[in-house]
Length: 294
Image (cartoon, rainbow, N blue to C red; front, side):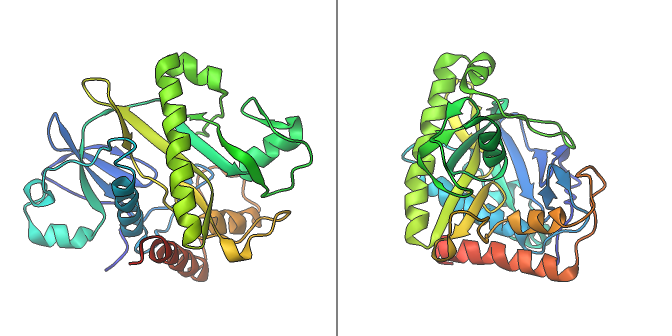
């Protein structure tokens, strides 16, 4: 199957073409979400797709949605895909990239959970000894495991803009205290439970982001994607060594390559060499195989 840079579903109204996902209106109650093979890094969409990536993201998300159903409802709908896309050839061309979901009201934050100190969290820690207002022990090394997972949310930025980290009180201002506490608590619960499972499969989930939405009864749902190579840092447990940036099964591989270039992290992004594209596709697929056994 060829790579999908962007979808085209003529009989449905396109509501949004995001960094990775195309969202179509099915009805007042349902949406169609198609995970393309687009890749973003530093909040910029790269010019070339990663073949098969959208299918991996969708299958991995669906795997975790099933495993977390006991903790929180999710956005997956019971409406069959063939009722939304009746054309069999069109469905086939999308592979496993398409899902039908309930139409929910997204919350204006990204619920980030960190179990290890890396990325922007490491930079914040070096400056202040804390991340998003949470004091951390002195003397941590790059990629050290934290004493316990921490909730470090960020605001959602428009396409091309950068998300901004906020402390918990900033989340309270956006959501109200009760909902902010619910989002924090369930995010930590999901991460802790799923990170334990992943570790048994040889993958460390260093950090991840969740997104949530509310239904008409203000019931919290897990939405978007869950614990995928796009939304998380996955490290091979057998190669983990604190003090250096570990190898990964996620798009950190692309980020590390881009960091070697003279690029200002603004659009347009540079083109990726073919070997980087293929290695990235292989890493996504390996992460899926390890986690799901498929």
